[in-house]
Length: 246
Ligand code: 4FN
Image 1 (cartoon, rainbow, N blue to C red):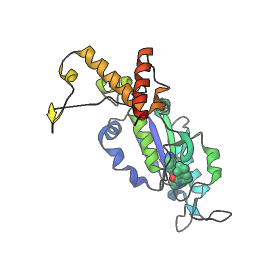
Image 2: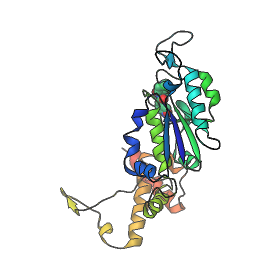
Image 3: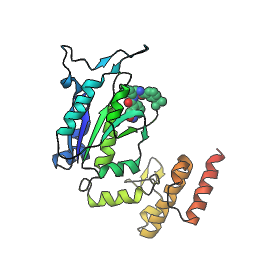
Image 4: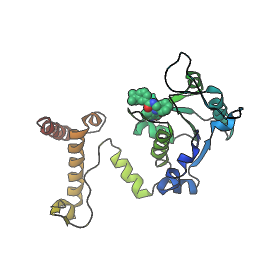
């Protein structure tokens, strides 16, 4: 997959996108990540990418011309068509479902805002908008990296066989079950006996029950989409009631 990022801070991507799974995906050619700086598409001496807002008010707004010129440069920098996604607080809430959808694309262009925002007319060049959550940020670069991280790990070959099948079982919409490694006892806290039992069916049942209990307690909204048996629904309802009493 080829991802083009439109950003006035391309250096922000260097560290995070060069290490671990994403760095290795790039080295292996599974992800091609390119940045395009709107500053390189300005004509004035100061390479201006922002201007005062019409109608007044605080802060500056990203000018349309350098941004759209950078989007077009990204478009023509590769074969075929590439959907354009703007990272913005008013975008579609990003989730694992959309990560799966985007991982099926050959190309994607991500546009990062800075200052107080992007001139509204740039949105006419976008196929979609994405938001990673409800908090104030200084730019769309971290959100773009969140999207790239979530999408890249789903690309064929990026994770090993074991990690990708583990992924399928935990993307059944539930939070993670509790995990333990050695030592069996740490500061008086011991690993649940069932995990030391070697009884694989019992371990699987314990983990699924714990994942359902945890999800019901901290994120009951996630259970709506989860595939639960009648018995598991009752387990979730019980866990829910436990927290309601707190
Ligand atoms: N943020 C809010 C309301 C109004 C403004 C903001 C805000 C960066 C250019 C956008 C933020 C959060 C999630 C992009 C936030 C995201 C951004 C994102 C983002 C600079 C303008 C700005 C009600 C959400 C708190 C700054 C709420 N996902 N403006 O953060 O780009 O993608």
